[in-house]
Every structure is written in structure tokens, then in C-alpha cells.
Image 1 (tube, one colour):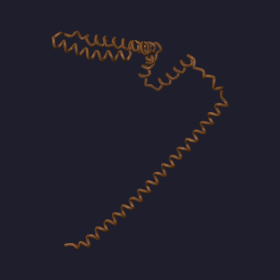
Image 2 (spheres, helix red, strand yellow):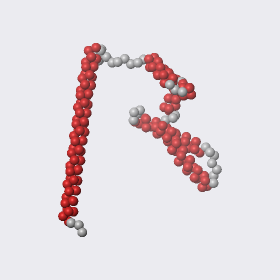
Image 3 (tube, one colour):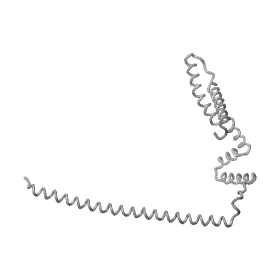
Image 4 (spheres, one colour):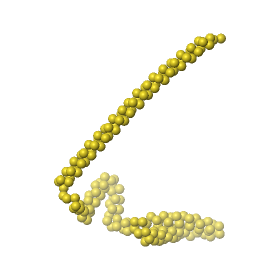
Length: 188
């Protein structure tokens, strides 16, 4: 067969070669690690210097504002109703000019002052989210219950059950919403 001494020498030699290759890999990994840590350090140094320059610019600007402006005790004047209205109109005209023709026409209709006031009034009273949610949930479950009872006993349905159930749920939602507003206040 084969000579055991020759095999042992071959195994030792392959182990040495593998050890040298592993050592070289380890050196390369150490070099890469050092480079990345140097890059991170230089990045953090650049960030710190940028923060310092921003702080110095901000402090200089604050000093200029203090010297050249009015006393800080005077409040800034609020925009008048006329200024707000003209600003709103300019903004709406600019935005509507960027819309397609059908979208522009729709936007002009819904942003008409009369339509906006009506929508706000309805949204604040009738179409409250809690009331609509309560109406939808009640309509779903109550209509299902009425349908199942009618089917079991053989009664014909009048097709108004869902509307009546929604109205009932909406009324309960409005009562809940306003009672909560009365107890907790506007911000609760």
C-alpha cells in the first residue's frame, strides 16, 4: 500500500498552506476594517465641522436680527381678512391652472364660497364621522337580523329596512357624539 510517512508529510504541508492562506485572509480583513473605521471617523469629523459651521452661521444671523430688527416684545401683526382672502384666491388660481380642464371645473364648483360653507356646516352637524360609522354598522347588523327573521318566518321585505336601520344608527351616533362633546368639551 502507501507509505504512512509520506501521507503524514502531505497532510502537514497542506495544513501549512491552509494556515498561510488563512493568515493572508486575516490580514486583508484587518486592512479592510481599518479602512472602514478611518472612513467612519473622517465622516463623523466632517459632520461635526458642518454642525459647527451651521451653528456659527445661525448665531451670526441671530445677532444680525437682534441688531437690525424691532424690539422682540412687539408681536408680529396678523394678516387681515382681506389679505387672507386674496392669498387664498391666488393659491387657488395657481393650483387650478395646473389641473386638467375637467378637474379645474370640478374644483371651481366645490371651492365656490357658498358650496364650501354648506359643506362645512353639513360636515360639522349632519355628516359627523361617528354618526356615519354608527349608521353603517347598525344598518349592516340590523338589516342582517331583519332579513334572517323575515326569511325564517316567511315575511316579505319592503326594501326600506337598510335605510331605516341606517337612520336609527345615525341617530344613535349623533346622540353619542354630542353627549360626548357636552361631557368632555370640544377638545376631548
